Image 1 (cartoon, rainbow over the protein chains, first blue to last red):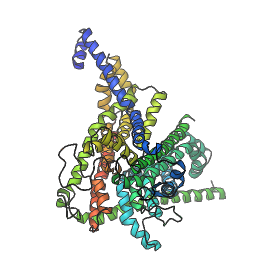
Image 2: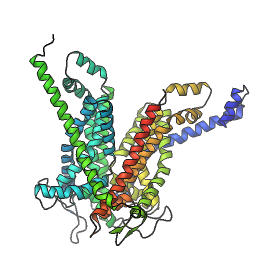
Image 3: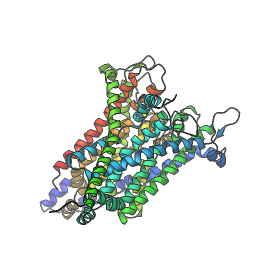
Image 4: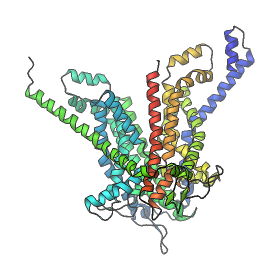
Length: 312
Length: 289
């Protein structure tokens, strides 16, 4: 159809009002279609919130008790005598694992990002970037399996503890998992610092390290913070790896060798065993709402922080 | 002529020290993963054979192969692609070709970031609430694939948008000057120039989709099924969930079998990613503008 038009136009023949009209309508129709595609992400985000709220609503207006939910360490959704829905221990589990993971991932990912962006070039740089990208692609269930089958015996042997599925195991696994993603975001942030900043500092006689420390890092500060925040968000929401590597027992940990249970893992482990519409089922969806809200805030803050660097 | 002053020397030493330290950190980040992959290959490779790939599990999953899980993963990925690729490309075309730089576009971008950042288990809850219950698809390939499609939509959108934006503005302007409409320009000029870039995004999505476990656990993937799925309304086994099942849920599992499953899964994912990277490098080499 368009072919026809352009052929006629190029031959100097008037394509006719009908043809132009039709092209115009097609153009408008496509505009509407791609607009629908464009807003789909917004629709889905709202949809996620609406549908998990719909399923969790019954619990929120019924059994939900703010004090018990957030401050009780007792998660006994199936207790015969008295069901309690306290997620404090689960929050502690998620927080301890994520915290340890960040302790591992932040220095290593920032160090690696600086090394790739500022100290390597050519083939080495290309190789490191591809390696980091491939590491980021390893599925979380494989990481969980690694925690279970490889890290577990290593921890038992090295530290002479009875169980190797604990905060330490999941923290290391999660750290290794989050580090590649944080590395590539941090490296982008470093690369976004204009070269003329570096050249100006080098012209003043600064060494490479002085350039990085005094010029590049302060200029990339927000982007690096964004990378860390996204890493935290990732750790917070990770499901399969923490389900398999934490030991999955409800505990407020006092040492890294304690087994814990994470918020995400609780949903993954228990949803299959609950009857749709029961308080237990609805409570799991309420945890889902909580996770959604927290990660939404983390992503929003990370976005604002990174955007701040672009404007400034 | 130029004697190195003590300050110069100190700076030089410090410089070397930092460089060495950072290089070591990089090595320490990569080395454990290389060792882990080595272990996976060492323990998993002996398990993998033609039979392992093309027969079903037997003896309560403690023996036999992974064929139903492999097939299930392929089905889930295909159905997810059918749903998310057109939608993702449409979204990217809107963002790259139509959207103005205003609060509305920023909201869309924020939604995309959040869609990628929402925990996978929350996507699973959404899949249960929306597709399994509300739309009455039941636990089925369709429900699981749609959940996966929404979860991985940002991958397609971001990759496609980038490759569309890499097409120079002058190409579009030349086309508009010939009297072409916006859509004619996009179809005849922009999309053909961006197609390889879009393909790298689609391959990345395949890799992401194949590895996801949590979103399909309650929406359509089953621990074990004696029969292969007959339609998109049936449940299916899946490789990622199969790895979870054989490594945690089955007593008396021979030690090497889960390693074999893990090796197949990770090979699939890394192969896809390598393909995408290779395509990207080829594209960068070929670029004429």
